[in-house]
Image (tube, rainbow, N blue to C red; front, side):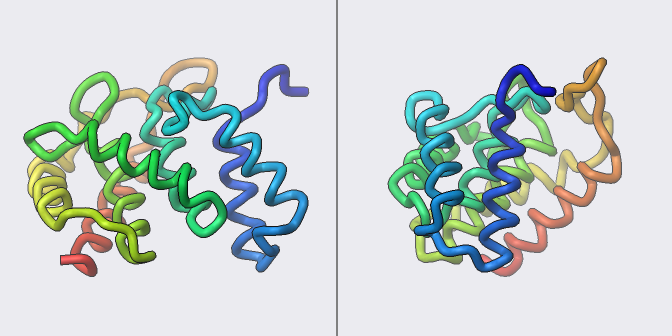
Length: 168
């Protein structure tokens, strides 16, 4: 039994329901959307109990909430854009390839859906990611201890770079 709600679990359920074809008007979709809106920090980003970075939950929320709550998605996109470092990367506790990949994935999805994101954002992110894609990676995943998975992070990086290729 969980004592606290998991933001990412709700986000992943939202994504699964949408992939299954459940309408944005369905009560379960509306309930999850309301939960996400009510739990957003500054109406723009989320912290989750399974990952130390708000970029993880926020990026996934953007991807799963597009077309359901585009005002909240736009706020989240704006928050991600405002937090890109001049060098092109993102990271809550410092520069991180994993977090940069999540942000790029969300911004690519937003751009493909018709949202506005400057190509410079993608170019700078891609350049930084290509130069910093190798370990060591920060420990962002929360279990009994902080940890990470090389394979998951490498997959996220490859996915982000592939998505950028499609945008640029």
